[in-house]
Length: 512
Image (cartoon, rainbow, N blue to C red; front, side, top):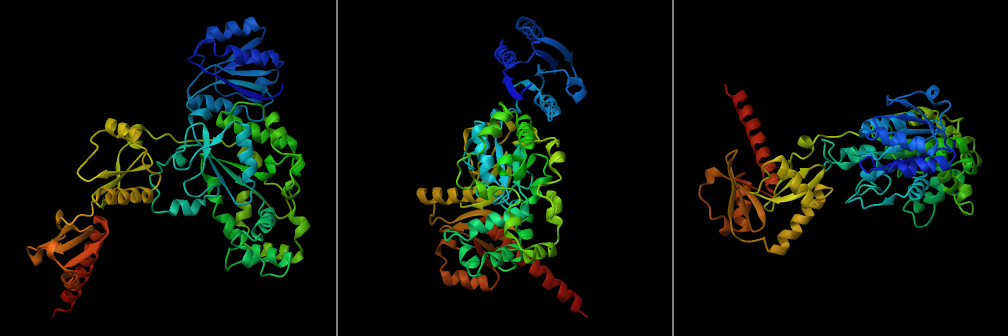
């Protein structure tokens, strides 16, 4: 039986009739009904009416031996997790599958694309297009589309993205609550692909690489560089952390390229089928595979597996062998092999996308305080500027606020919005205002668009009447600090407090 995946709406009467009729037209006759059918009698009647012979298996999990004589598996119902487990059990099976649309269906989720540069990104983008997935903005990803982490295009370095201080350490961003695909490739072939691209005049690295006299020297630099680009190990290690995330599906270039690129058509179909089952994407893996490459592509020959053998000499292989091979091992490659030994294991690795309960996901979290009269609050992975003095009192208010406002993907964008609003409203006023009294012995004041902290020991001050010289004199005496936000001023006051404590401690220790 030809593999394909189809779906029906479990809440709509008779919505399964057309998928069943299509399966019969494709040649299916023997059916296994599994899961928890919401319309058991309807399905049974339709199977009899269309001429199927069927058996039932209420378990969501089955083995290959259970479907030896089966053409079609019908998942009659169940929640998203249950349906996903059953679909996952179909990886490697040559059957057609009909499943209900659940919250795990691709139309209900955003799929994120992650990849190592020059690892076959555009091949996966083409596959997305064949599957009917359009790209949506990284600023506002939509369900039923694919997107990328904000600001990184396709190539988001795992380590750097997670180290960014503007990123939510609680992991409430959509990226970590969605399925993602990570594209990797044999680093030896990545080097050759990099050379083709980096040496072009429009690339920033061209001036550096073209300094070297021939291709072999340039390849050597791409392997071992410690000046500009970093070694191939350095470059790859920025990304391979994605291999260890449960919500990420690693897929290698060699799996998807097919025989026309030096790979295997059977493996290509297996990998596309696994992607469909994990992401709940309808269609035929064989049909997708046929269309994945344009046979007339002028650049196709450069994408063949093992091209490094045509370009490397003994010196390049020796340089590569001197590098620590940890990055090769994580990806599953060895110098003498073309494909990753991890393909089969990763093909069958379950996709686990975490779901955060509403009472945790929508709890407002203060991300930045006191920016020109605004606080920046994070809710469900997005950042919202809220005027100081206003608050969100309940979970229902937080959910409503989130749904009614766009918010921002990063704190920086939210801060830029605040500055734009303040400028537009003329909020850079000269009215002096006490914002916080008695913070470690300081009063924090906003004046003329700036923030100051004044030592309370100075006494009453006409802040609005202070000149720059007055401010400088007080600052020299450690009686005034300034900053662009209340958070900056608090930090400066804390520094003074720490220095003061250290000074007092030294005096105490030196007292006879």
